[in-house]
View 1 (spheres, rainbow, N blue to C red):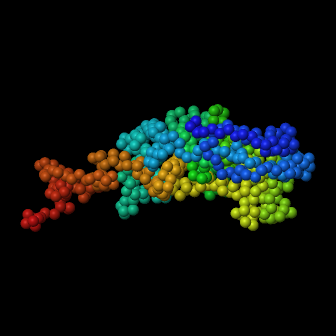
View 2: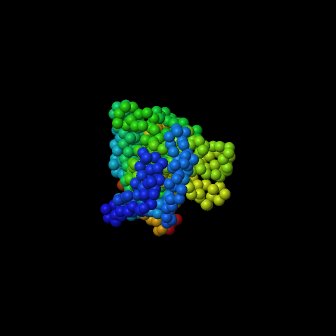
View 3: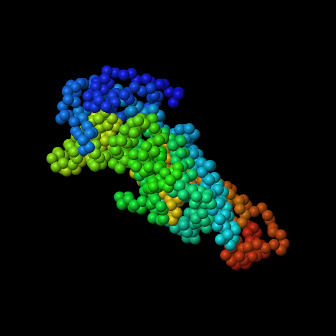
Length: 579
């Protein structure tokens, strides 16, 4: 950010009023206006509703701390929440000033090629690792095959074509369809791009043999890492997600459940999810662009070693937000993540937080809990120097609790009409859907196939997320110039991935002639015509129409197309009829 102008914010007299107000509440707390003295680059100003042109007023503020009725006391008997909102500041608070401009970064900036954008995430390093590890596994099972060609080694071009077929099949929503139905074209309903790229037998073989680590030392690595079978690929792809995009001012943290019912040491059961059983993954998502910035797989309790980490909700959030520390962005999370210590920790990292909070937290006063005496659509606010607590009553004996370190007022959203929802609640509802949108996009064109191996489930999810992120960057770089649907985007990507493999197969002389002809037709190449006028005496060839099934050889051929033909498919005709 060295090319941007630096702006030093000057203090105003309003900060002194705010500082005195909070010092009277608790002499041990820091001054409220501390964050206003900022010397960071200002690249983008968010639309947080905290900037006001009104002057601060100190009416009844000096007397407020002296009156015990001006506080709500938490269930712990220690935490205080002031009933009076803090004075209105005339300037935007420092934690509401975004310091990094959202959008694509590095090589992704200005890149308008769909396949080149995807290659930023699934780069050469990743495909080489997959190819190498897959070949290692193939070497270990080759002795089980009678013919060595049935277990031949793979290469980078074929692995990329395999990924392209997954995207192609997913774009037609056929990922759960039987493989034979996709390749079988006996009735004209097969997918031509599939059987021209590779045979059905080869595709099944790759699905079975695809590996992401060296199987020879996996047992040793699993002693201290449950994610060892896919740790390297997972880390590389997530790093690429963070490297090429800067998220907008609001982000969401939530959990995904990747459907899986096979054997897995960290499989989870979540009855509220549609799949119920699967692999739980935490995600940091930009709800504005549906870009996934960070992922973390829930592994339960890891063995002692470098990968043993805490699974407490606070620690999970702090690990997920590492890519955006110090950028003054806001995090939205549900009540599983929310706690007062989390908000304090995020503030130290120059991040704000908005989220629902559970009523069993010791810091919440009893006045904020469900009460039959509460009036419908009523709202109760509690203020501290770092955050605001709100309790909204949508109906009798029910309350919605939320907390925010971004909002410092008691504003009611006028657009909600008679429901009179506070701004904190409506903001939470608008920004909490980021991960849900990613789940929805993944399910619409899912590349995942039925499998009994949990590393494949994680890999399929990485492919889904990579395609969505690539689409986000593509739209950002082509904003206002082009509109593209996700299905078209996926099909374009899949074609660029499988095209080199189809071109390679069209040159293999041992493949059926018709297969090579269709491949060249699909590639847009001109069909080569036979130039020979006659065949050598005594030569024999397989009948073109009989094919390999009958394997019938003949010495006769068609004088026009020069194809071998047996007597069953060749008619004799005199020279007069030819004329």
